[in-house]
Image (cartoon, rainbow, N blue to C red):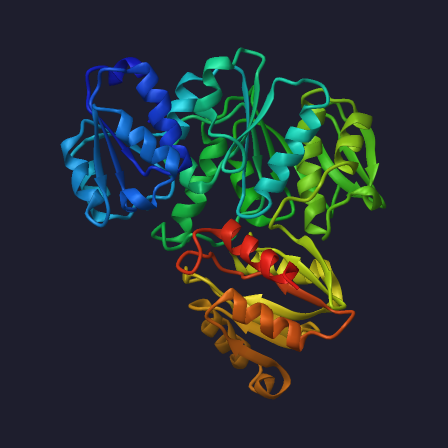
Amino acid sequence: MGMNLSELKDRSILILGFGREGQSNYRYLRAAFPENTFGVADQLPLEKLSPEAVERAQQDSRLRLHLGPAYLSSLAVYDVIVKSPGIPVTLPEYRRAIEAGQCITTHTALFFAHFQGIVIGVTGTKGKSTTASLIHAILKRTTLDTHLVGNIGVPPLDLLPRSNPKTLFVYELSSHQLVELRQSPQIAVLLNVVPEHLDYYENMEQYVAAKENITRYQAESDTLIYDADHVIPREIASRSHAQRHGCSLEQSQSPGCFVSGDWLLYRSEKGEEEPVLPTAEVPLLGRFNLLNVAAATAVGMRMGVPAEEIAEAVREFHPLEHRLERVGTYGGVTYYNDSIATVPEAAIAALGALGGEVETILLGGTDRHQDFSELARNLLASDVRTLLLFPATGERIWRAVCEQDPAAIHRLRHFFVKTMEEAVALAREHTSKGKICLHSPASPSFGLFRDYRERGEKFKQLVRER
């Protein structure tokens, strides 16, 4: 799916999806081809698109708009489709376009076909935003020509015109961005992989195969830094051609980065060991975050950043918004916003990180056919007393709790809520002073909210309102 710009000249191009990345695709390709006919297809009607998008659409006389419910009917008319990551590969119209042999590319594929410099790609189900941000903070200490791109940073095509062979791109890659990639980054970071997005792929194997693309096309001179404590990344690493660096909280790695006693150590390819920093100095909550720090440290060491600079970058690192973010203490209750917890594993990790203080938890969102039995077991073993449950998965989570322990109905208060206003009002009423109210939904947010950010902002705004 690598595609050179020369192949696109004189062809009609459809930008499929006109969010942040779609608009970047448009800017990049329009600058390259002022004359081509472009189309934009998006399920939102014009008035729901961002003001910048509307302005662009109105100024370009060679742009056709295909907006609203029938947006996919436009696919067959164009020579080239530039697909956004949020469009499921399982859509019948999209399948037909592939079968018809239409040329399909993506923002990520265009970037990989044209970039200069070094790409450090980061993937995994959870922790990739934190790890990518940490890597960026570490590399910035020795070179300013370092950019955080992808899901969390800027769309990388925006930076191509200013890049050179020394530019470093820290690229957070979701499975959706990897699925069609036929090129791997020079440095790949593979965190743990657990079931997610199973509404988007046909099965777990397909999801894992997408993640494996981060290393599948690596050469022996490339590097793979991987989570050695979990089975799926270990299996993927065993098939990789790259130089492998393991990251572990449990056993020493050679080469790699690991926890030994109270210290994080790095062992080089030559077998030289170097202490980087005491684990007590890591400012991120939760043991799971140490693995993210280990992965970021391995990248820093591999790129020649001195250990003391890495330690300093880690110590100064601020947790990301919406990831176990302390909102503040109001009326004696401390509120945490963990809206980015879109899978059960993330909510389990949040409960583990905050310990026995959590009395109230807000759960539930879009149903992606996830399994909530492990979350139910963790809730029952915790000191949580009140569950505030959003549609649609809130009901499934409560069912999973009752299946594990029918007596839960007498032990736990539970409320099915429809709005964040209702949830926060109930949280105020049912959380004791000195305890924690945690917003960690274990599900995505589409439907009630545009995305996890909007959901988190709403929670924070209501908590602070009094």
